[in-house]
Image 1: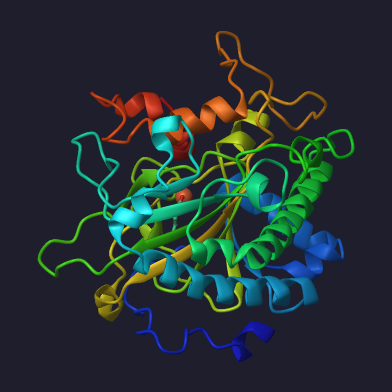
Image 2: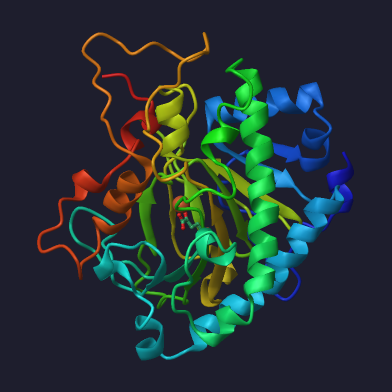
Length: 359
Ligand SMILES: O=C(O)CCC(=O)C(=O)O
Ligand SMILES: [Fe+2]
């Protein structure tokens, strides 16, 4: 195993503790996936069915190393971005205009049915904007100055998403390029880069920073340095386990759209963010994400053309909802500043299917 030679720690950060339960996610190699290595593609398919999360080793290919380099630079951009005053950042909260791009302040959304407020802030940057597919949104200087870097990161992440979609498409024996063609890079979609910041929480008052959820879209490419991300394995007795961040790797997970396209064959795992474990809990946590989503007008329903995708059962009703509306409903439905009385369940996605509990 060549991974043994790679450091498992991030320089300059407290180590991830060895005494907490972690998810045994598969480590897939981008280089092998690019080469179409059959065993690696099988592992990708299995991870998509079983858990919907895996690590992707980016060290081993040139394009992977470029993406790692872009991610490093964008972590620095994220730190500067969140140093701006709250007043300045709030100028870029476009949620009142029914947009999910831009800034969300800490405490602007609820993390549970009881109405507990979140403990993280984030900023979503639109792919449509950065790649010149739509008009530009107002943005702070630090983001204007980083447009080229953001474009490079978006293109690199989108290429990984397209590769994964193509490999899964072919394992499902769907007509060629069915999945990639619902995610064309130059089409209008909710694809976005998210910068996330969660400050250290007081030792005697540590709450979930980001509430449990499934991602709304198709494939998520996530960069973590500190722990705190947790996933809930399938089954009624499951307990939360941490995802240990690994240097040189992205964490890749599937979202609701992939569950709907495959009528539950693929899994979009429930996850949340809590205080980083052990000595990491006193350090500010930053993360960087690329969310891919189907193009705005794509209806999220079972795809035709694969014998592996379960049929719609008698009595099962598929909602006629497009990708854009799905994301807005899920993303803005738990915002305290937008909704008078939050209907927590109405903003949910495929969480129930993710639990895989037979009723
Ligand atoms: O910050 C993380 O590690 C995960 C963030 C996440 O799950 C999200 O933004 O949807
Ligand atoms: Fe997420």
